[in-house]
Length: 149
Image (tube, rainbow, N blue to C red; front, side, top):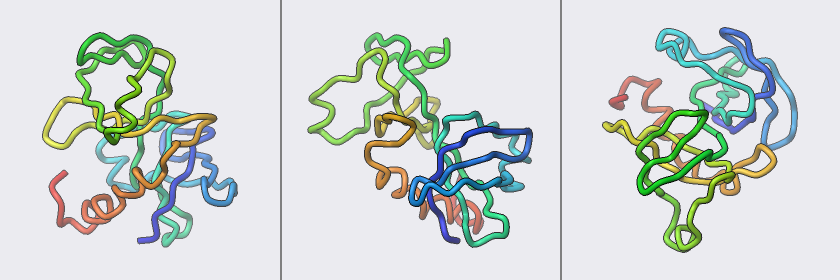
């Protein structure tokens, strides 16, 4: 698997137009069959992991990218829905609290219903793409059938 990050520009039920964060190229990419079977939806503005080892490259994972609408204690509201969340950014970044209006990059915590905020995004790009890339081994394992998902 050759994973890279891209930002979705447009979507249909099973395909997305995405722009590579590496080189800016724009491609039409289908969702991996596993994502289709699980009913995973992608919306414009999300960050996705593209597998460039397939032809055409397939979307293997999505990362939520949304503006924070409200915050209270351990609750974060995104698109009108409140979630329990954990700020998983490094200590130095957590010293600056998340604010309403920040665009957060989130994922569902494994074995939990909480969201994990692990980066912020500006202009459609994560500030620290290496944090999302750190998930690549887990994504690969899911598709190799060796990880619990």
